Image (tube, rainbow, N blue to C red; front, side, top):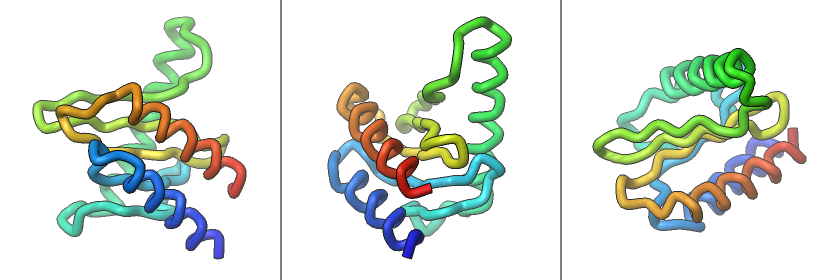
Length: 120
């Protein structure tokens, strides 16, 4: 039941913007909770990398006096990876196109993260 609700949130997120290519909900310890990823992506690897990057971001923000981490943004030549906390127990990870309008993507991801946090 909860799995279906999480999948529904991801489906809505992916449908909210043509700029979003894939998304996943990952526990803070790296376990995949729900995903809408391309078939060629290993869910376990995505989960582990997302949890590691968010943990590093948390520590960096604290050590450098930037307060609580809100998101991690990675820009590559083929697009973006955005990771955002969804409550204390989960992370939303999104892949976006290189031409993405980031402001709209940030807004959509923030709304999805709030909905996910309510479920978890």
